[in-house]
Amino acid sequence: MSLTAWIAAVRGSFSLDVDLDVPTGTVLALLGPNGSGKSTVLGCLAGLITPASAEITVAGRALAGVPPHRRGIGLLSQDALLFPHLSAVDNVAFSPRSTGAGRRAARERAFLWLAEVDAVALADRRPGQLSGGQAQRVAIARALAAEPDLLLLDEPFAALDVDAAPAIRGLLRRVLKTGPTTVLVTHDPLDALALADHVAVLNEGRVVERGPTREVLSAPRTAFTARIAGLNLVAGTAVAEGLRTASGEVVSGIPAADVVPGEPAVAVFPPNAVAVYAREGEHRGSPRNTTDGVVAALEPHGPVIRLRAEGGGWAHGLTADLTPAAVAELALEPGSAVTLSVKAATVAIHPAAAS
Ligand SMILES: Nc1ncnc2c1ncn2[C@@H]1O[C@H](COP(=O)(O)OP(=O)(O)OP(=O)(O)O)[C@@H](O)[C@H]1O
Image 1 (tube, rainbow, N blue to C red):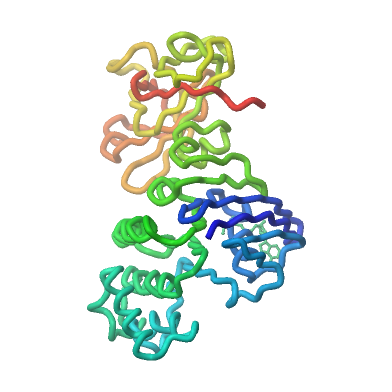
Image 2 (cartoon, rainbow, N blue to C red):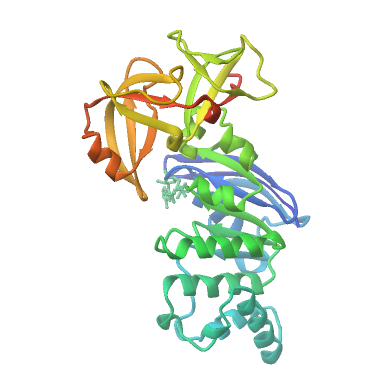
């Protein structure tokens, strides 16, 4: 049930050219910013968008010219899109019914899938009587009850509130372990980390980086992927203790096994590993990995405030996560002079992509 696809599509002035290879039973996350072409890829796979040219094979079957309902593809989007006039169990039973199962067998199968998503208690409710998270559970059961060869997930948590999303993410994680070959579209690297074996990063209709999820997100080889992954990335030349930036500062870290001194390298660390001090304030932490900068922006980022710095050295573009209390205590605002510090133990040094 593997997927191999090469898709070329044009939408207005936008052009897409991607190839994907998803081994049987694995999950590929398509990660990219708004407008990078993620939905276009899904639409072409599902048969809802006609590509300019494509070769798509699922489980050895070429899908060119096959109408959407004959593709053996299940689609789960942000909104559950349940039939409003049917109960939850009838919504789920609709899938086996439409592939020829009898009424009774279809209901039995529907109950099995509702049990799988912890939603048996909701069986008799209509979609209007379900919360967003409950509706999404039923929609997952409906998508899986069709026993698709390929499952497409289009930002499945985007419409859920922050309390409901983790439970649905956990549920999908569980069912996808033994589930069908899946392509997950998301702009959130956490979704990819939680669910996907592999990730392909899309930018402007092209795959700019791909590989095993953790490898790509923890060791992004391009600044673009680092930004998508929400990680800090400082480029330089590998030295024994880390790397040396173009302006001569040394960033200490833990080098990966394949780092070669003298070769291009990147230092990667998450925003929550960066400590921020008012410039004249007292320094704590490792004195080696500190750099002076200026606050460029402070933006809410979930429960924390993400600070973006600018400056001459490697402070430029760094992000740091702070609690609102810390921002208040340090009286930070755009333009504040700060010292940023990151412990060497939290900095991973990787070879840089050849470019
Ligand atoms: N019907 C259309 N006609 C013309 N251009 C379109 C059409 N639909 C999408 N596009 C363009 O195609 C490009 C890719 O869009 P697509 O929806 O695939 O991106 P995406 O990565 O899924 O974005 P998002 O994360 O915002 O959903 C965008 O530049 C968009 O403006």
